[in-house]
Image 1 (cartoon, rainbow, N blue to C red):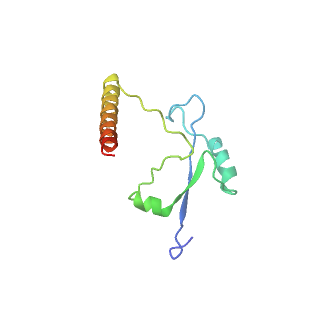
Image 2: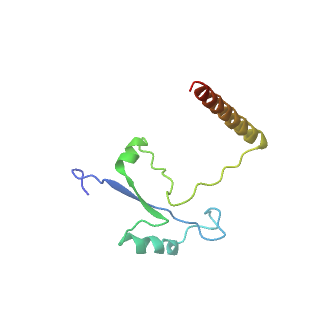
Image 3: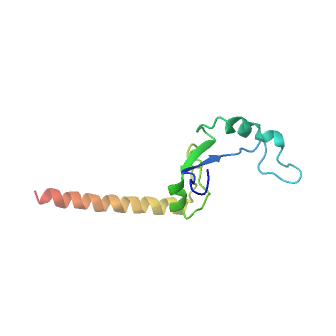
Length: 110
């Protein structure tokens, strides 16, 4: 890779916290041994559940924001309040009513 030949894809590797860790801290710092998986993967890079590539065009389209989520991990379930759920349901029912009205109108015009 040189200035005249920029990369077309960027590798991402998700570092997983050790079991029973929520974060690193002064009393629980990252250990060099935790990079063994990354070192083994580095010389034979293949996509897997913790490693993926992103096209440079995607990064450019994302305004060079490199915070790109792991596509191999499912999205966390969203938690909604009862009020928010009722609002979503109401919007859904309203949309259904509109579609039914449109269908009835289309059928009556036939």
